[in-house]
Length: 367
Image (cartoon, rainbow, N blue to C red):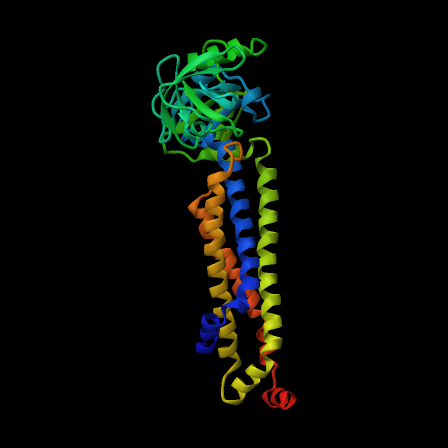
């Protein structure tokens, strides 16, 4: 074990190649993870921000906000269901946002809502909006009046909210009548009537399971499709497919990480065969020798992860705002565990080769 540590200290150049490869792989893993988290969070924030137990869509909407319409009659039927605590409307309009002083039009999701939540304050006054802080990267500032859609409906930005975007569009949260005005003015082909929303946010009294609540709501209305918050999140177009794709790519990258370490230490074991034979001859056990390999692989992996994380942090500073990468501490921790585990597993591949070294044969061959 001490020999393994001394080799790391005295001959670090021997590990530069594998360390460089692991650094690049770590950078790739962190960047892919950041893209996955950014795509997911910025596509589903508008749903998760409402603290909903259930979301009620019209039964012909195929679980889509943009195809759904619910009205006050449906609200009354939901409120009559035992176990329902609060019901609030939610509607979304995807439109361009012109920001004063900026040449490019930002993507926006204007959301009309009724219920405050942990992420959302009470709805603002007519003509005002809370903006998702991501819009700040596009040049938006509090106190500005942005123009929404081709009809250039003015909205005054009065506060920031976090993690409230929808389909990668920057959230602008307004009171219901302002949303209806924005939608009807910009989309006269799809007007919204008084009392209409795209979905109702339902919060239970806490005395009923979510599945039972959903069944009761759909049974009571006879014309709705109700989803749990989690199901509504994964009903967002592309979410399931993108998660599966990125997860597969990340998994393959982790496998390659282990493979790189395994190949490096397999070659290093062949090079050290005479040394290992000598150490065995003077009483060193195979377990101790393998432990030294594991320590070295772990140290190289940790060093590569640290360097890869620093490179990723630097990359994050120069990414344009249109790239929805979002680097979360949880993802960084998962990547650290994955990289170190893959490195240790790769180092352990040398176990069999080391245990099969015959001290007498190896020493004799080197004489």
